[in-house]
Length: 399
Image (cartoon, rainbow, N blue to C red):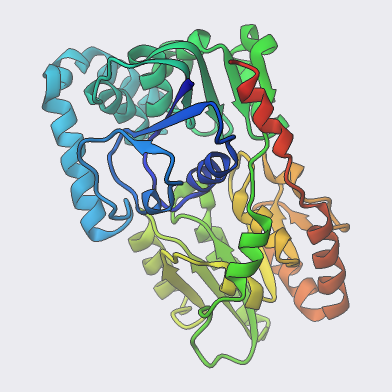
């Protein structure tokens, strides 16, 4: 029996976590024992783990990392991590050095600094694994590289390495330790290899796995829009973070309203930018026109009911939200950025524009005013989605 360990930062409701769940569901049941360790010890999607997967955490909270309760627990975890094993003092030179670099770049990312602390405070297991897999960059990658006993080690990258704020100094060259580095798209691969060119031979693409039938079934479930609005509905699914550039979408909605377009824009997701976005919405007088729905366990009824799906972000790896909208045959508008470029062919199965409020508004207006165009783009989008189940062999080949 081969022993495999997967390590994840959290099991909150985001794309990478959903991709991991689908990979675990598709993993061959025969000849493999699978363990999962969640660094932060929290996240609601743990409830969807296949029964055969053993959760190693001695303590675990299923509260969302974005909920009020979940944030309180998360902050407590970070404080404990700083005190455990003297991490705060021992890692102070590392933290200060990397913080200085971030200040120089005018891009301070506390979460990137703290992943090292979280990794160092993680539980230690004596089990020797045949394969250990860090399913996310940051903490999971550090933990598997430095604190797991395994014959082979693999890591998954889901974001544009540089744009996400990672550096070799921050990561302490941890990727050199891995036997295989999987990226979710070609652009993610190219971005990573610009920083780690010596990893060329062991870096390859591993596509996200989707439960296509499950998505379509969930889209037919009860739920979705509950207001009595009769106009067009625009939808975005994603966390309220800087990466998603939702302030630009708010400005685009302001333009649409000024042009007399009868539409509302809804966002399924939660995040640390909620207060900032709420203030932006208030100043733009869009309280009824740009609606933050919060974290939604099943966003698919909203996707099914929406007229247009918009994903105008600063950068991506390969957005699962876009893939899900494609599964449901939605007309899609995306920003021209890494990740998105590999998912939409402009004019064929979606629209693409610059991350500019005017261009976003123009693209949405064109889609809303041409029903036949929306239907054609949606049908083409649904055709291109397929599940590359054979990619799982790339993992098994390591064994």
